[in-house]
Length: 124
Length: 124
Image (cartoon, rainbow over all chains, first blue to last red; front, side, top):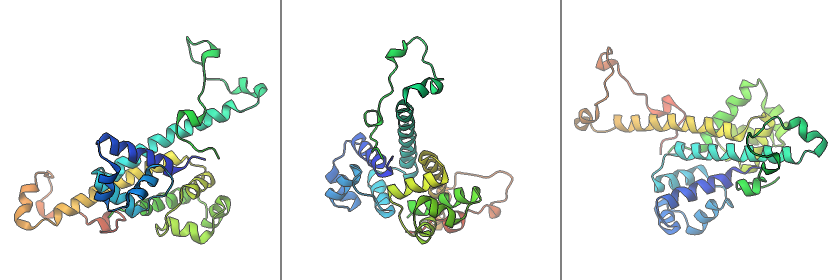
């Protein structure tokens, strides 16, 4: 199962790091405890809408931009998940699904990463 | 303050209504109580990541598509909010900000809706 809070946490952490700011600084500006912000960034706690708004203010980013980035991350995670699902189909059925070809690459070199490697996805 | 759960609720309700489905049907398919789903749609309860995933499955929509729609709604709400903020600047300062002109419309006909009218936004 792809969890929104995981991808949201990744996006929030990346945004903060892009600005070269510390957890302490952003948590103080957003008036949220350092521990809580850290848990939100690690996808361990759901951020309430009020908290998310405060974090966006602290990071000086629009919530729409943040959610656009989350949506893009979700799309990648969904792709990785469906690729992994195709991989796990029993061998006799797989050739029927393999209509996508990569030209110039020998078939044995085409690998599809498991979601855990490709993106930060929690398996259901 | 623009609340994510409000816009998310709107998007979820719209998606369900587009499919001509009832709250009862979707709540049963997502294994969530009808009352809870109704509160999520009305923006009164935060949906956990697990619940959101279950609702997406029940509606047969990708979470990335849903969040893309939420991001678009957020962008509109942010625009309405900043327009309202410009409106509320004291009169002597306003002409300095009024560099946007609408041609062919007499100035007295140009109105900027308050966010509460334009979109479902909660004032901070």
